[in-house]
Image (cartoon, rainbow, N blue to C red; front, top):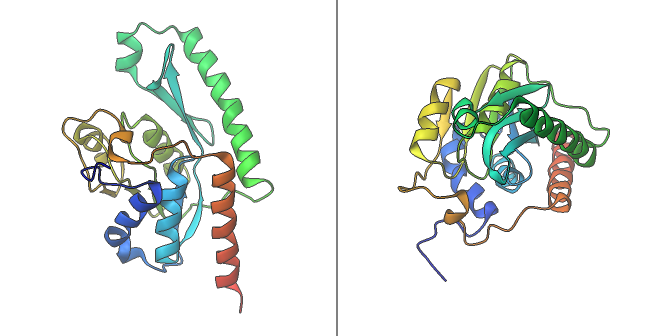
Length: 224
């Protein structure tokens, strides 16, 4: 086993972020929003350790043709769209290709909303301190879309907390939020998965199980 790899798995990565977020422990106006799927185990550990509410910010990356992991943009709940114009111009991606990708990802975003949330209403973010969490950032396209979606709802503060990201992505995001927490900035940066011993894809069932546990805990905390 390579002990130079910093995170065992996503839950371990979440645990490493707890200390940096300790100032928000137990605050009623703080909401942790996970970017599914990979951000949910990370956010679950944060919310559990700090007695904070957990919910979702649904975001979908728009992958480039033939290279789904390379983002040409992203969409988020509420109709937010963010495009990576540099990637689009460099690869000469047509508007029709972008529209087709958006249509496909809107359908997946709607599917996930129904699968994960069911009848549970989306949380009100106005006046809240929102902590956006993912398992790491590469281009930052999905997090930019998440920030834009949250910003539309007039939160009190937006904090982004991720375990790993390239320095240039953090520099791009920093002016968009009130606080940015990221303990690891590998150089050179190849992929998020390089920092995890176990980076198996998070499944829908894992997401639903963790959310159910978090929401049950919140109900128990709210009981008289």
